[in-house]
Length: 64
Image (cartoon, rainbow, N blue to C red; front, side, top):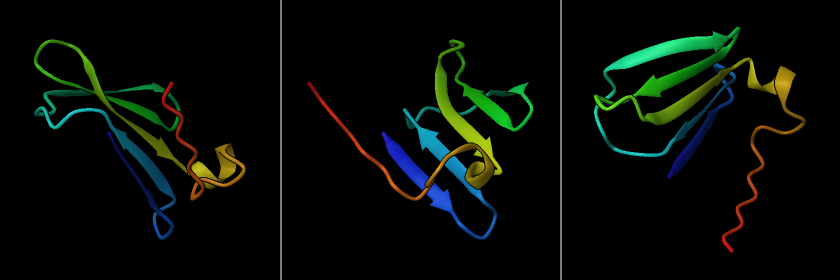
């Protein structure tokens, strides 16, 4: 999994897989889901991230 926040464009992108993106849908305004050929979600793009998250540059990760 890769997480990238671009301060300049204010976009947070979470990528779950290196599979090729074949389709993207804006499910809700500013939330874009990327899908592979089998309709699995492989990425989430959050536009205007600083308006939706308290600190989009801060990441906490927990594996149990």
